[in-house]
Image (tube, rainbow, N blue to C red; front, top):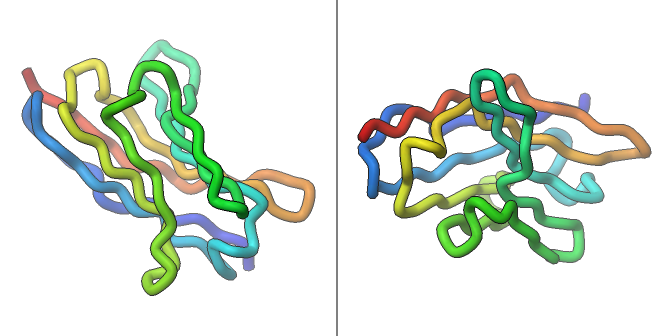
Length: 115
């Protein structure tokens, strides 16, 4: 079964850090690419960071220099480390992956950054 499950969201103060994890089934290496996206109320879903099967990464402009996406082979997760968080980083963070010619999404995890 193809599935993505996010974890690690919560409430954090501005300037703090957060690590989100995306657990993938059957395996993170089954996906052509896996990315983290976010959506704030009233806004469109936007890219935070994405990593391909080959390990290439790219990031959204608003998080460049503050976000790092990586694969954790032992835990079978794709992790997103975010530092220097701002209130504008608040939103629902989704894990999305491309596999077998289609895309699949997790249920999302809420991140709230307080000022």
